[in-house]
Length: 567
Image (tube, rainbow, N blue to C red):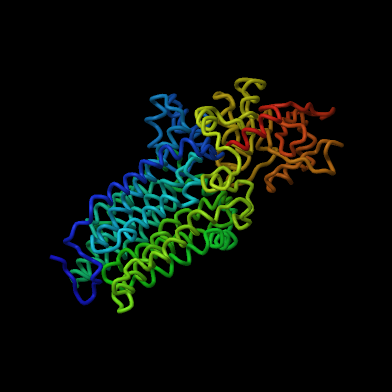
C-alpha cells in the first residue's frame, strides 16, 4: 500500500518498489565512464606528480617523503596517498592508477545518486525524474575536467556528495559518518565539510522523535568517525612531520582571502547552475520528503562557497577548490525539478500531463552539462588550462577524434615541457646534486631520485614556507642549481638573457643583486625555438660570465603541436 500524508506528496510511494530498469540505467552510466575516460582524456595535473614522488619514496623504503630523510608534509591528500600505495607496490603506473580510482569514485557517485532518488521518488514518479540526477552527474563538465588530472579532486567531491545523498535518504548515521570520515582525511578542509552535515542528522531525527536529546545523539553518532579520523590524522602528522598543520597550508597561507572572481566565473560558466541549485534547496526545504536532502545539499553548498571565499587567493586551476560545490548544486537543481514536477502533478492543470515538466528538465540538462563548454567560452576563468581536451569540447570538434592515438598516448609518459625538463636534469646534472625548483610536480618526479630538491615556493620545504626563499638559505643547503620556469620578456630576450620567472613572487628574488652576483644562467631549456615558456637553469658562480646555452628538449615542434591537439 502506498503511504501518503498531509505533508507528503502523492508522488512519494515509500512501499512501492521502482522498476529494475532504473538500476540498468544507473549501472550503464557508471560502466560507461571507464571507456569514456580511456578514449577521451589525457591531461595529468602538474601537482599529481608531487603525490607520485611521495608514493615512489614510500614504496622504495625512503618513507613518506619528497626527499629521502626530509620529513615535510608536502601533500594534502592523505587518503589519496593511502589508496594509491597498493597500486605503486604492485607496479601499476601512477597515472593509470589515479585515473582508475577517480573513475571508480565517480561511478560510485552515480550509483549512490540513483539509489537516493529511488528512496525519495518511487514508481509513481516519472522515470525521467529518477534518471535525471544520475545523468546530470554523469555529464558534469568540471568533474570530467578533473577526472584524469591524477589528484584527489573528484574523489573528495564524490565523498562529500555521497555523504549528502546518504544523509538525505535518512539511513543509519554510521553510514553517513563513515563516508564523511574518509572525506575528512581527503583534504585538510574535509573536517569542516563533514561537520557542516551534522545539523542534517539533528533535523531528521527530531522530525521523527520530537526529542532534541535523541537528535543530538544521532548527530554525535554521525560525528564519531570523522572526529576519530581527524584526530588520528593529527597524531600521525605530528609524529611524522612535527606539525599539526600540513606544510602546504602554511606555504599557501599568503594566498589570502578572495575568490569572488572564481565564484562568479563558475556561476557564469555553468549557466547559473549554482544558483539553480540554491533555489532548489530552498524550495525543497518546505517539503517533508525532501527537506533532509535539501538541507544537506544547502549546507555543503554554503561550506564550499565559504571555503572558496576564504581561500580564493590560492592557485585555483580549473576551479579545483570549488569542485565540492558542484555535486550539491546538481542535487539542488534536481530538487528544483522535483518540486516543479510534484507541484504540477498536484495541480488541476497537471492532471494527465505529468511529463510536461520534462520540457523544463531537458534544456536545463543540456545547458548545464553540455553546451556551456563549447570552445571559446570566455567565462572559464581565462586559464590556459581551459578544458580544451575534455569530452564536452570534443563534441564540437570538427576534426577526427583519433581514438586510437589517444588510447596509445594514454599509456605513455607525458610529453610536455615539465616532464622533459625533469628528464634532462636527471641525465645531465650530477646524480646527487642539490637543486632548487619552482615546479615540483613533473620536474621533481622525473628528476633523479637521489637528487635533493628544494622547493622555492615552500610546499615541500618548511623553512621556505615560513620565511620565503633567500640566497643565504640556498647556500646553507648547498644548492648547486636553481631551475625556474620562466617567460622571455621582449625587453630581455635575447639581449641579456634575464628571463622572468612565471611565479610573480620569485621575480624579486631572481632579479636581486645578491642572486645575480652569485649565480650564472647556464642553460635555457626549451622544446621549441619560438616558445616563450622555458626553464632557466642557474648554477653557482662567483663571477657570472658568458651567454647561456639554449638546449632543445621534448619533441620537435610539429610533433609537439600534433600531440597537444590530440591530447
